[in-house]
Image (cartoon, rainbow, N blue to C red):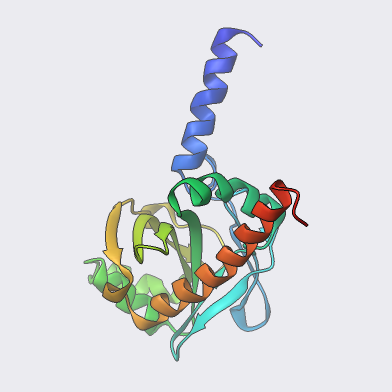
Length: 199
């Protein structure tokens, strides 16, 4: 591989980790709908379809995550978790009604009729975040709405890179992060034991 091709590969890899799933992720399906719209499959950060795990539920919305027990997900997140105690996670919110979608859009400052009416066609929201369970903080890297067909709406993509404590988040998201972090810790401990040859 010549230098220009090698450099192009490095640039593409960097954009992959900065983006949600890939440079071409927009327009790609990232949720596969199941019965009643409940996510049957979601795409994780390794671009693999996984059966989602339900980690929080309220009257108007449920939060799912990719299967954080999958070997590829654990391997990808292990270095950052081992070094800094953090991991990258995608949270998929399933809207049980358009009202939940509208509440999120209003929170983003998008309260005009055009945006709020679009919630009829929105089934989900995705947030990609850097989670620090020790400090109980989360840094939002990206957020976007997902249409009923499971594709990201490119016009809704936001990259705020804002950090908050878990206490500053809504109860549903707090529950999701707490439950996820317990699962992740167990998986990282098992992976570390495997690397140390303890098993």
